[in-house]
Image (cartoon, rainbow, N blue to C red; front, side):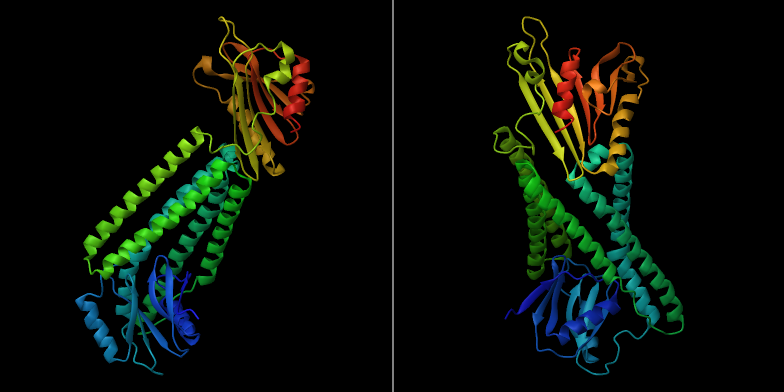
Length: 454
C-alpha cells in the first residue's frame, strides 16, 4: 500500500473555502496534504479522520523561502495556542488543521482577512494571470488573423490546430478566474462592513473541463504526429515533450533542494532562474542542432508522403526529356485537415541552353468546409497587387477542361503578360504549377491525372 500520492488539483489560489473543504474530504479518505508545488499536490497516508482545515494568507511570503519567517513562526505559535496545527505552505497560502469539533477561527476580522487575501492575490494571482491573459488574447487574435488570411498555413499544422484549441480556452479561463475573484471581493467588502465572512467562489469544475480539453487536444496532436507524421515530426514531438518535462522537474528540484539547504530567498530565486534559462536554451539548442544533423545525414525525413513527387518531368516529356542531373525536392506539411505538398525538379542549363523544369504546390483540403477559405487565399495571393508595376500580378480565367479541373487560371505579371503558371481547382485540392515551357493539351491532361486525382 503506497504511503504518498501526487495529484494535480484544479483549485483557485484564492479559493480558501474550496481548499478547506477539499482537504477535509481527503482527510476523511485517509490522505493528509504534505506539500504543494508546481508539479502537483502531494498527500501522505493517515488514518481516516474528521479534521477541519483553515487557509490563511501571508502576502510577504514567497515560494522561494527556505522556511517560515520569524513573523510567520509567531503567527504559527499563536495559531497552535488556539488549537490549529500548521501543515504546509504554498507561496503566500498557509494551511492549518485541527481535530477540535468547534475550534476558535484563526481569522476573526473579515476586513483584515480581505485586505490580506487581496495583497496576496495581487502578488501571486492577479499580476501573473493578467500577463497570461494578455499573452493568450494576443495569440488568439493572431490565430483569428490566420483563419482569415492564411488558412492553409494554419490548418496544415498540427501545432497550430492544437494552439487554436488551447489559447482561446486559456484566455477564457483567465477571464473567468479574474472576474470571479473581483466579483467575490466586491461582495466580500460589503459583507466585511457588516462583520461577516463569505465563501470564496469555486471554479474547480470549469477549470477541470478546460484542462481536460487541452490535454485531450495535446494527446490527439501527439498521437497524430507519432503515428501519421514524418520521422522528423515524430522525433521532434517526443523531444519537445521530454524537454518540457525535464525542464519542469529539474527547475522545481533545484528550487526545493535550495529550500531544504536553507538558502535565502534571493539566492534561491537567482540560482533557479539561471538554471531555468541556461537549461532551456541548452536543451533547445541540442534539439535543433540534433534534428538538423539527423536530417542532413538522412536519418530523419520531414516528408509523410511518397519518397518522390507524384508528377515528374519524365511523366510529361517521356523519352524526349533531355538527359541531365536533375535535382528533385519534395516537402510537405500535413495535418488531419489540410495537407500542403511542394515539389520541384530542375537541372542546370546544358551548353547554355535551358532545359525543362517543374515546380508545383498541392493543397489537399481534407475538410470540405475549409475548401472555400483555401481557394480564396490562393486567389488573393495572385491578386495582391504590388505598388511597383513590374511586380503586379495578373490572374486570368482559362479553360479548365484540358486540365480535368473545375476551375483554372493562368497567372502572370503586369509588365510581361501571362506566363506558364497556372492555378487549378479540383474537387478536394488546389494545384499551383509552374512550367518553363508552354505545356501541350496532352501534358495538361497528365497533370490532371497525376495531381487532380491523387
